[in-house]
Image (tube, rainbow, N blue to C red):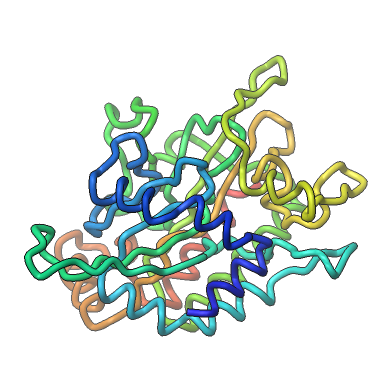
Length: 325
C-alpha cells in the first residue's frame, strides 16, 4: 500500500536504498534457499513458526507472517501510521525528518510471494513484513533479552545462559540482577514513551509484545568493540545530521536512540539498544482459551504470558518501571 511509501519517506529512507537492501534477488536467495549467513534469531522465542533474516547491510529485518498476522497488520495500518508519524518532531529544525518517540518496530513494507500450485512449501503465498532492525548498532551487543513482564516459562537453562547467541528472558534478567541504569530524568522520558506505546496497543486489543533489549558492556579502558554502522548513525548524517544538546546527545533523536542507536548508562559502563517487537497478536477467542488452559496447567493466571490487553500492558509497564533505574 501507498502508506508504506509515506512511512519510509517519514523516516528519510529512499526507495532505491530500500529496494537495494531487500531486493527480490536478496529476498529469494535468503528465504527460499535458506542462506545460513543471513538467517538469524534475534528475539522471538521461535514458537510462532515464523522465521526471519537480517539484510546483509544490517539495516532491516524481513520476517514471514501468518495469514492472520497479515490480516491484522492491514487492519491496524491506519492507526499505526498515525501513531508513528505523530510521535516526535525535530526540536530544532521542523523541516528535518525526525525519528519518532516510539519504541515500536518501524514497519516499512509488506510483500507477498505467490507460489505455483505445485510448490513443495505447502502454501500458495508467503507473506513478508520488512521492519527496521532495532538492534542494529555499531557496538557489539554481548547479551540480549526478550522482556514481557511475565515469569512462567520465561527462564533459560544454565547451559543456555552460557551461549552467546541465546536471547535471555525475564527471569534471567532478574536473577542475573541486570538493570537499565539511566538515571531518573531519562527514565521518566523513556517510561513516557513506553506508556504511550502500551496505551496504543491496548486500545487495539493487542498482546504478546515484548521489549527486545541488547546490552553492550564497555571495557574498563573506555573502548568499544565496533561492528557495522547502525541505521541511527546513518540517519544522523548527511540530510539527517543531528544537532547536539548540552550533554552531547543527538537532539533530533529520541532519548533511547541518541548514542550508537541506544542510550548509555548513567555510569558509562553499558549501552542499551531496545525496541518493542511482536505486537500483531490480537486478544482473540483462541487466546482467551489459551489463557484458561495455561492457568489450569500452571495454577497461575498472573505469571503466564497471555493476558487481557489492559492487564498485559500494565504488567509490562510495571515490570519495566522496576527494572529501569
